[in-house]
Amino acid sequence: MKIAHIILAHAQPEQLQRLANKLLHPDADSYIHIDAKQHIEAFNALRHIPHVHFVQKRVKVTWGSYSMVQATLNAFEQIIASGIQYDYINLLSGQDYPLNEASFIHQYFALHHGKQFMEFYSIYDAWHEAIPRVTKYHLINYDIRGKYKLEQVVNKLMPVRRMPRGLEPVGRSQWFTITLPAARYILHYLHDHPEVTRFFKLTWAPDEFIFQTILFNSDFRGDMVNDNLRYMDWSEAKPSPKTLTSADIPALEQSGCLFARKVNIQTDKNLLDAIDTFSHYKTMA
View 1 (tube, rainbow, N blue to C red):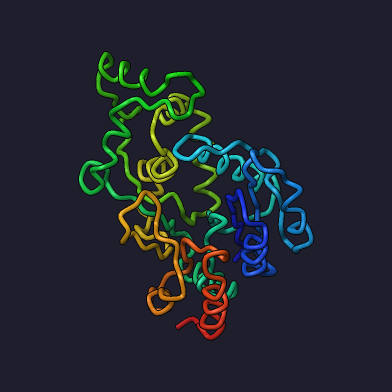
View 2 (cartoon, rainbow, N blue to C red; view 1 turned 90 degrees about the vertical axis):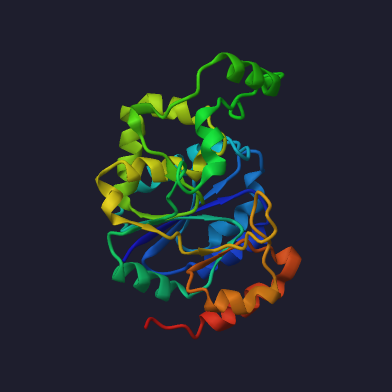
């Protein structure tokens, strides 16, 4: 079971090193995208960790824009160009951390081979707050002076937007684990249908549903599991999940998830130590 981990990161090199080391496995490689706004030299220590590669085509990532999608697509391209026949591509952020040893993670995906693990809630039926992302124009992706006022004018004058090609929009969390054929399909689909890319570039936070939507409207739909295997706590009702602490250890241990999001060693370094302790004793049932 060969896995390519994509890690999207922009800060905290020490924490990123710990994540890369936790993922170490003979059949795993980590492809790390460092936000192009950051100096890559700060992350040079990662080059000494086995099986770590930097994504060469870096982009400046802006929260809520298409840049997050592009960073992921660039990683897809590099992984496929490597010629290595990975079974899975696993998308993580630099603030994620495995709740299991690498061997456990590989065994898990071997047992569920061919499944796509991602959240794909219907925007119209279950994720109503995302409807304006689809129906309105958003200029977050463009560096235009006065763009938010322009957005208001455009949305008053233009008709309600509709998904191209009759796509049924689904999604929620951007983090996922999918097979190599699924990633290859996404790249080919966007290459063959540039109007889909144009649509999502005018969408707020397209990273949270572009990948799911493409696969949901394809032959991969039957293999999709509506679970991204990440533990996230949304109890604070903020745009991002709560930063986890040692107080969350019981919930993490009982979650059945493979990864925790999100963690910060500057907030609570003991949390990662505790995770390492209980993950060491977990075995595949």
